[in-house]
Image 1: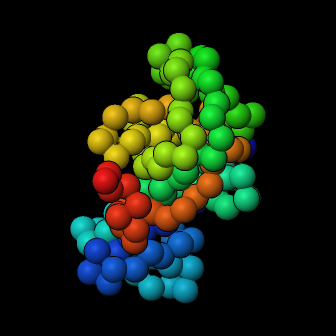
Image 2: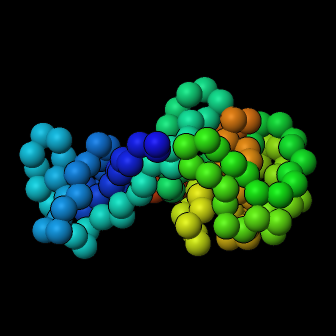
Length: 143
């Protein structure tokens, strides 16, 4: 079973806060600090780790380190198949940087132009987290 974890980018504080607890009144840290909703972006842990063992969250920027041909849906024993199924075929070019997003019940990679690249489960083991879209947006900028 996959770990359910969240982190928050607090817009006002410009701070990434990990290991948060969410409840109907808002969210709080494991230190007991309580925050209401509206000043943050909440991101979910994907249940996957990159090639160096770092946890991958929504909003992370990952770089695919080697070329991989992709056929069919990605799979992981704790997460299962992606709903895109056969639509996931193609390739995820190495050396490119992608934004991790949760779309249509799948963790997917999107390029700097917002175009769908591939299902994260297909390439997580050959990818590396290099930053996130809030602290390092320049990593996704095209030249």
